[in-house]
Structures are given as structure tokens and as C-alpha cells.
Image 1 (cartoon, rainbow, N blue to C red):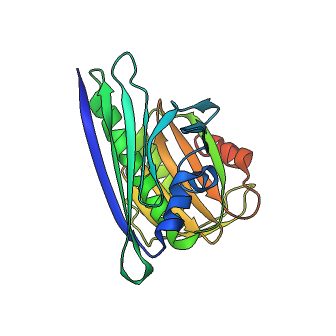
Image 2 (spheres, rainbow, N blue to C red):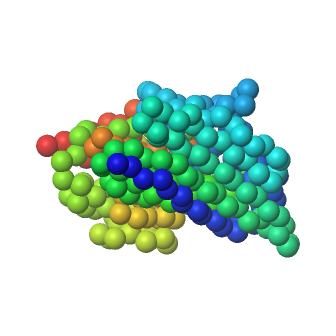
Length: 243
């Protein structure tokens, strides 16, 4: 069993196609909105995340600034993920950005993996739009921190939302004002939220919390100024979910 999938996303942003290309086709650009640290070299996109590495993704089309496509190798079980960006300049200096993510998920449990992937991809694309809107031209330091294993996800989200001063179902525009122990105060606004993620914009960072596999809350932030405090975020998550 398994499933082929295709997830299209698009947004109109007030930047040039060249600025979009910088964000999607270079390591520093991708570091500022995707996940972990990324290198683009020798026709390959390589991303390290949480002490490990995602499968290399080979560039199959690079037509700056209009089209970028790359795909992972097909595994023995048929698994692969492919990304295609289409970038089109519009009137008054705006640009339409379209991302189509496709591939194949093997196994009988593909549905849970597909749900997690679709929720996460929605967050990543929203973060790309937020980066282009508020931080274009700047480079972030990516932050990745893991909490302890989570046994009850509804409770885990209630705890996080409560700590951040958010309602049970956050929505874009909700204010965030909290001072995590040992970390700089967080004073920002929700820019995206769904059942498995929440993203917060501050003046100097994009802070994201994601329901991770195999089962822990992940902080996957992009810090544009100041101390990224990666160990501080890890300690905060451990404290937040301590039994």
C-alpha cells in the first residue's frame, strides 16, 4: 500500500522574482524559512535537520528566476519527494510564487504521514511568504530544538498555547507576549496556525512550533538578530513538558 500525492500552494508577494529566487535557490535564503541548514551546490540541495540529514534532492530544472525543481532519489520502497517552484512577475513589482510538492508515500500508515507532511508544508510555505514580506534580503540563523516525547498531543498543544498566552485555537493576528525562563521575552503575533503547527513573527525572528515525528514538540525557528539561544529553547521545551 501507499499513495502518490501532490500538494499545490501559491501566494502573491510584494517582491521581485529575483528576490524570490534568492530565497528558494540559495543556502542562506532557504535557511531563512525552511528547516535546519541547507546547502545548494553541485546540482544538489542538502538539508541537515536535528543532528541528521534529509535525503539529498537533485536539481532537475534551474531557470532563474522563473523555475526551480528538485527531487529526492526513489527509494527501494518507492518513496520520493519532489519540489517545483514557479515564479512569475506581476504588475507593480509583485510576484506570484507557486510551489507544487509531489511524491510517493509507501506503507499502510501513509495517511498519518501525509497529514503531518501536508500540515508541515503549509507552515513552511507560509513562512516563506512571511520571510519575503517582512525579512527579505536578510539571512537567519536556523534554530532546531526538541522537547521530550509527547504521549498526549491535545494536552501538549494546550500547554504550549497557554504558555504563549494564546487561545485554544490560535489564528493569524493573535498577539503573543511571554517571557520564557532564561530566554529573551517573546512579543509578537501569530502569522500561521493549524492543528500541528503554530508560527509567530517577532521584530527579529520567525518562531515555529511543530508536532514532530516520531513524537515530540519541535522548535524550528529563524532568528535574524540577537542570540539564537538554541540550547535555551531546548531547555525551555524540556521544562515545559517535564512530568
